[in-house]
Picture 1 (cartoon, rainbow, N blue to C red):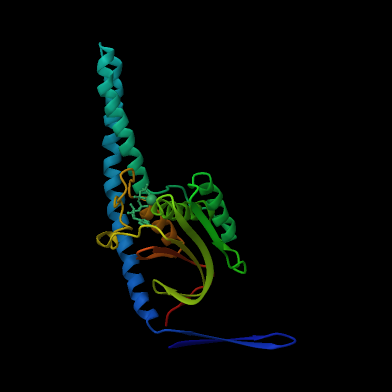
Picture 2 (picture 1 turned 90 degrees about the horizontal axis):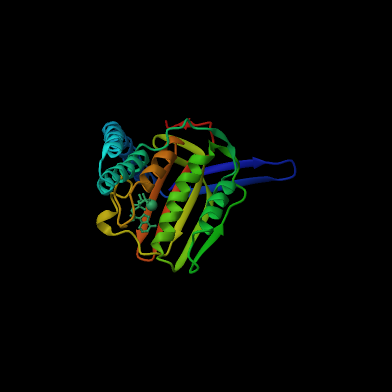
Length: 266
Ligand SMILES: Nc1ncnc2c1ncn2[C@@H]1O[C@H](COP(=O)(O)OP(=O)(O)OP(=O)(O)O)[C@@H](O)[C@H]1O
Ligand SMILES: [Mg+2]
């Protein structure tokens, strides 16, 4: 058991807060470190690959357009249109793999405003049979982060959760504060925890280890970049996304450090 004691000495009364945590947290820490290191290595590989694909793709599309202008027969344009269309599809896939290229715009934000934004975005597209439940800890303080990047990460995960319900089910958005949590090798006094839980189909066992890799998908129309982008954006904030799944209950947890003041692990 790991124990933390906080003394809150108010003017009228004093309060003592004792928190106990299981030691298996240390096991979790090393797993997180592995996940983070793995993700950094994969991102570097994927970005390198995506860059290499991007340039010839531009050339290919341009050449197809020139060719189209020279074609004597209208009916042949069908073929150049296929080249252009497929080049565009690859281009957006590669852009997704490269992730957002804008510089982070960090500002003080309220996490519930961000989540509510995501909720209003998905409410328009959510099927009638799917309920979105909110379970917020409104005492979570504001913290510094890039609003658009957080919206993007949460949106990617909430969309997956809605898709997993296959039109019938519940998605819960739950926020909590975690105290004294270590992410990577940094110990934070307060961390925001967002659990996105659905009662959908669950993640097939053989995919569970790979879902954060780009281009891993089980959906016919999926590109498989949603989770990879979400993880990389959250990592940029010093945070982490974890996942647990069993039949009828899949939970993605986003952990984001709240305090800028970090205490290195001794
Ligand atoms: N909540 C969930 N329940 C079950 N499976 C999930 C869940 N979230 C993700 N997955 C699995 O992980 C895969 C990867 O998800 P990811 O968001 O990266 O890609 P995608 O949804 O397939 O495509 P897109 O790029 O359009 O998001 C999904 O195809 C799905 O198999
Ligand atoms: Mg997705």
